Length: 132
Image (cartoon, rainbow, N blue to C red; front, side, top):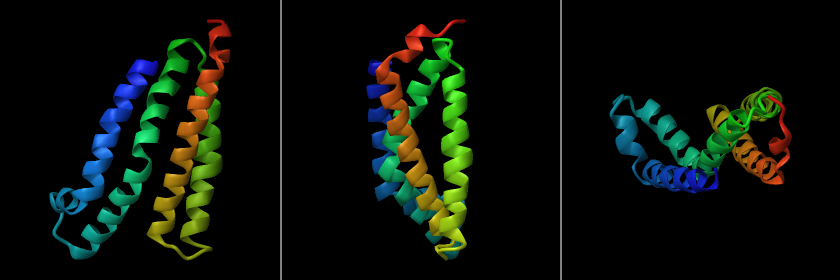
């Protein structure tokens, strides 16, 4: 898991750099609408800040599944995506008035948190005791 995690982090870090510096070019592949390009570029730039951490989440959560500990990823998804990401994105977008930027920052916060938390949880090693 650790070797693949580092490899995935290197790949997602390269993608993050591309998203950050080439966001105009990527979004322009799909539309020439200036407003859509501006919003898409903002999303790719914000995503670039945490995408490499999310890469660790992808690998470690699947390592839990592969070890037979399927409840841990289920709980992680329930908490971080349903109980944190959706309410946070809503709160930032509507009550705080950040509109689409609030959704982007809500996703950034929850994905960074889920990546770090899952990596920490995996490093504790409790998954080794899972009964299949």
